[in-house]
Length: 229
Length: 396
Image (tube, rainbow over all chains, first blue to last red; front, side):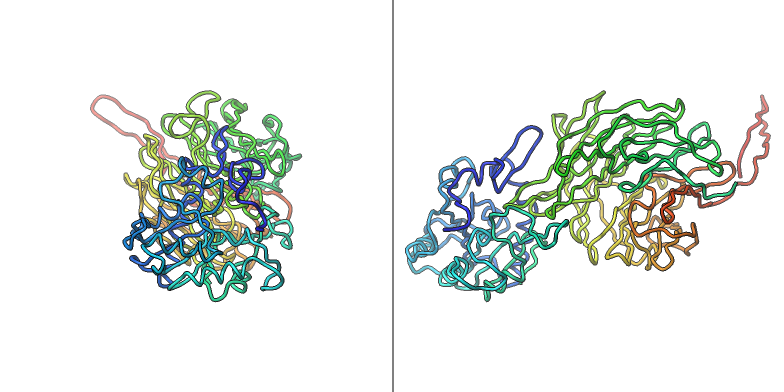
């Protein structure tokens, strides 16, 4: 069971416990398409640049895990990495998310198909391949979008019962070229550098700590100008 | 009496002093948080080489944290951040009239803003310009965005279209976000007035400095960025001035605490940013260089780490190159932004063209001037034409 339940509306709706909140005048938005650009900023440009520095090429197949409403996938397509996966061998970009809140609200917020499968299961991974044409279709890159901070796994290096290592291993069985994790990394509190800023329910680590957990995958610090290890 | 002149009654622990400015009556004014930090204070000197005295405070603040200013004739337009709590900031707009020595306007621009960075550091910096139409444009650190469980500081702008009427660029309620968003802290908002009432917004994140222009028709233009070597630190300061029809802009900040950088561009919707490295003194440090213009040349005033003194440099090519360093103030100036005044500009006092500045010298605030040049004493020039004689006083 992850650290937070991504099925819960309160995680997304802009309320006090939401992971996403944007205030515009007197209006408060949660994770909603009208303010999509403010949540993304220029982050995806940096992500693509980081991945291309590690070998990502247009024409390769990409599956984005924990894709929410597929906004990052849209940016990949806009940058020339498309088209969207459509169940045939022609598709290049697939957005995957299992959150029931995402699935229930995608009609108003998503433009792409949001595939509802769990990549921790072989059935789920097979379904991802099917988005690219067949049960045996190759998927070149698997990119997790801020999934790791939701998973259990304490300490700077792998140890104990955790959800991180199995998740990474499952992604590797699906990836033909590489696995990358896009992560909002921990930021120390300015007033107490021993403490993490940010929602205390989440798993905060430095990029170096995430690398220790996820090697040999690439890890990319979304909030550090997409620094990649 | 000789400069520098000691100033009492200001508390610059959390905001640098502002100014100085000279009025049409020849008096010199400076601003800053008052002694308790709970109002903006203004002080005046008829002769700044002798003493400044209080003219009066603004309305009450909870805690004045950062002030910015812009001079139009005898009116000083100010924006001041009021720290209400650790998660709430209010930005207020004030005006002070130097011809009547009165505070005039006191309006709330926006309140209840949590401006914290991802490291939970509250942001207070603002900047203000006044267009030729009289419209005030404020640029400030506004509401953070919560993004995947942490929150990131952002910058916003608002326009003043009437008394107590602050609107976004479209004329609607609320502010317009200038920063891009994402999981990025955007800080250090600074704006200048460019060509044809265009406003240039400059802010930074990490090692990146971004400029966006707001046209006179209030269309926000595409951002342009440049990357610094190391992260700019301290407050970036900027000037804009007319150079034979082209508005030149120079922005300066420190990088990594040891090297100053300047950014230059010519006013336009999407100007080309030119980074000028290794200028303004390689051993300069926080506070970042304060920039000035004397109508022809650009000047930088800055502190050096080696001796904690202040120095000046002049550029005759709009910031591309800077000349020889000259001493401006000898003392013990600490390495913090609050120790050197902002938003002043060169003025002529008596026969001297001076760079005015207020400096914290080892705990004592002092007003000082660097003399850019001395004017030849006034002489009477008689100009004859066919019908009349005109007697005109001129300075050479």
